[in-house]
Structure formats: C-alpha cells, structure tokens
Length: 140
Ligand SMILES: [Zn+2]
Image 1 (cartoon, protein in one colour):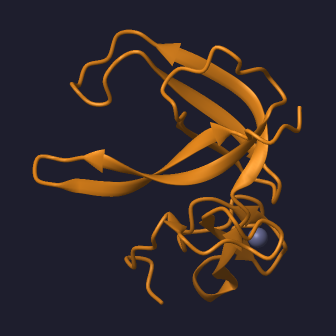
Image 2 (cartoon, rainbow, N blue to C red; image 1 turned 180 degrees about the horizontal axis):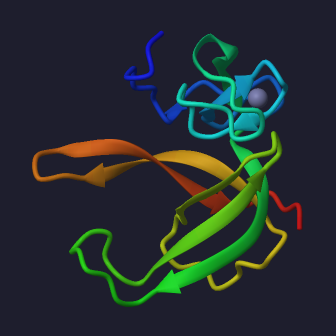
Image 3 (cartoon, rainbow, N blue to C red; image 1 turned 90 degrees about the horizontal axis):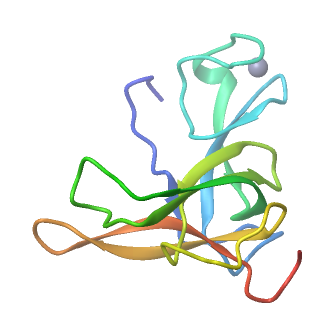
C-alpha cells in the first residue's frame, strides 16, 4: 500500500455490530488509535505511518453531537436548505456528513444516527454517496 492509494469512504456491507447499515472505511494504527477517513500519511496520535496504518470498518452508527442548517450555499448542489451533522461514531471517530432528509425538525442532540447510501444527481447520471439519518426505530 502506498500513501497515494485512494480508499473508498464507505462500503455497502455493514459491520458485525451494525450489519444492516453501510460501514465507513476508517483506519487503525498499531498504537490503537482509530480514525476516519483511512489515510497512510501518519497517525494523529503517535506519528507512525505507512504499514503501521491499516483499514478498519467502522459501524455506520453514532450519536449526534452537533448540527447546523445551511440556508445559503455557493454551489447549486446540494439544494438549500440542508443540514450538516457532526456524529460521534460508536467506534470512536467524529465525522461530519449531510443529513437525510435534508431538514428534520425532530432532530435533537444525542439522537442515534445511522448511515445510509443515497443516489446523488451528477452532471451525468447519479453517484452513490453516504448520508446520515436519524434512527427511525428510536434510541434517544
Ligand atoms: Zn498511532
């Protein structure tokens, strides 16, 4: 593996803990630090790099720690309003992602959030991308 190698951000297959949700492709250092996204430039905790860092699947579930609704955006996509969420994954890393649906009036700090793959329109066709959504089965 080289540092120029590109890693996917997510895979459709879930983890053992959360099998029904896509997994995020994170990284794990030999020191034990877990991070997202995967990269081999260096561990944020100990500085090891290269072969000390390997991919690890992260469960597509976490807790909402912050969110912001965007009403003015420089690009045509995504259409406003939309919501950016910060979620502390069950496996440790804190990630930022877009919320699906774009606005959820019931959203509250501490909500259980889960990953899902949605098709996003492109200039030609669509592209699968990861979004986070409030866990409809509860868990507040
Ligand atoms: Zn490390």
